[in-house]
Length: 537
Image: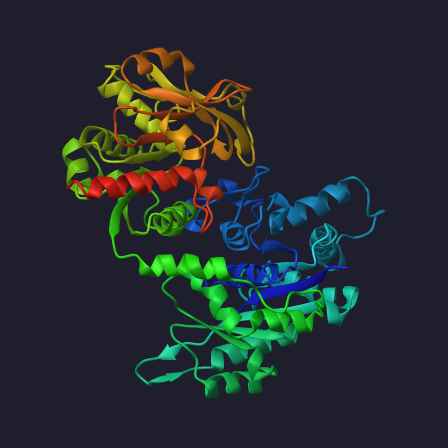
């Protein structure tokens, strides 16, 4: 029978419930415990697929094509598991499922209510994961305790205790303990009130994870323990750290995983978590002294979380190359011409143009790719970033004036990128793109083929447009090579310029499969090329 850990948050949003859940999952797995993780998001959207990255952050794509919350990226990177679309559930998805059942007459004419029908659907989603053979299911409830949107999830969490037995459920509450510099002291009242709110719903936390900008002194831990009815050992401080990858080790030092093992009676757990490889990864991170400057050129740079997996993949690759990646965000809308591109990008050792949608900022992305091509600066284009690089090449090397994507200019005389055939008549935007993992056959003699060290790879996709095969001949005739193809549909997945030190575009999103200690090969070699370039200037 599976055990359940419920992670809630209080006081303010953005405290790192996802990092907490991922860190605990990492520690438990390192002790031989099999772990599944599920995130509940209280918003009514069915998934984040149609939401602006500036509002929601990046959309993380799973192997099976789920468009999910960015916390699922943390789960994969920390715990080293592949999650699915079933690991991220929204209120919209819950209500859609219940209403579909009502339309089919499954409730026998009864009134459909939040309790028990919505709460039962929530619990069913949890129990489905619990039936997959996992020892522990970690349940992260998005939002903040006290928000009306989260009440059905908290009620379901309360009912869980009765359904499976109190001994099989552990409640973890992540809260803020602010430090007032003017007064020179920590304030515990926000945490006390947050726990009071939680208890009014019928939930008593077993563990409190206290977020702060610094380490909590023992007297503050004891005060929180006293007022919130937990033991001092169950108050886990989680201060700001240089790298999020420190958090599992910090929590291990405080016995967080041991609290879970003891509370849930996980008798087959190893005596302690083997975090040797993780510690070695962090040692490499902090021992590096050489720096490499990378520019991410995109239109969502006002919210760096819009490119979270990209930046994390860069850091993974930097660790592998024993350097520090200094990542800067450059607004593609601010790049207006070649002179602007040079002014904004000169001095960087590598240029990365990530994915995106829509015409806004696309010309700036093309100009950035053109600068990297001419200046022979290492370049990596991802999804739309690859398409922008090819369009720029078509215009300025092949002489195809007005070349563009039909996404940006439906009337372009040279549709170098165009809608995929099965995407032209799509009416419903959510969940209808080319999503999930697809096969790509590589040219083994290409830069990308040598990076992966294999002829066949499987990477994740999220797009409606593809490069137009009608332009392959003219593009290759002028020096661009297409070195990765999906064999099932003859879709171009990889491009590169062979006589450039490193100019690579990928239609897929390699960032989603990168791991700390096991970086994606494209990011690894992109950083390696950037290091070499830095040595020449």
